[in-house]
Length: 118
Image 1 (cartoon, rainbow, N blue to C red):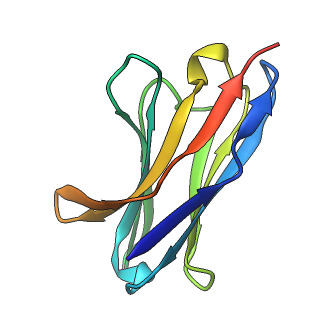
Image 2: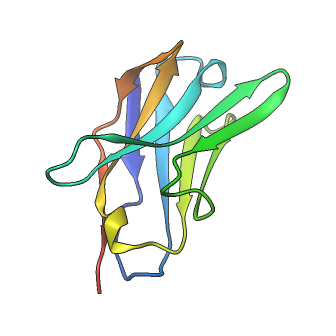
Image 3: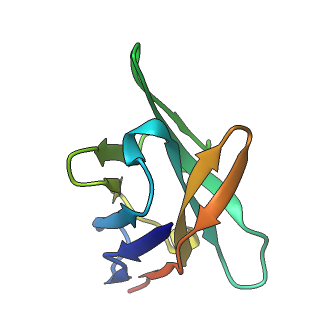
């Protein structure tokens, strides 16, 4: 299993970024995928998760990003995305994607740095 994030960088407050997470080594469409972040000196926190099943797609977000971030996935490309709009300095963190297996997240990417600063 391999998860590789990309798309991070430096952006001004109010700007946008789209993160990507390319997955390999497992049947991507069979798993929920999540995004987490960790700011300096803080614990890792949940950002968003996307579920895929016969009944359709469901998404869940943390309160801190709801209405600004959108998680999506492309099962044909084995990729999960995080579109981040209206970015704030407090969104600065290393962002990680992870595979959810049951109630736990069992595989993680290496992370991509997002810095929101003027």
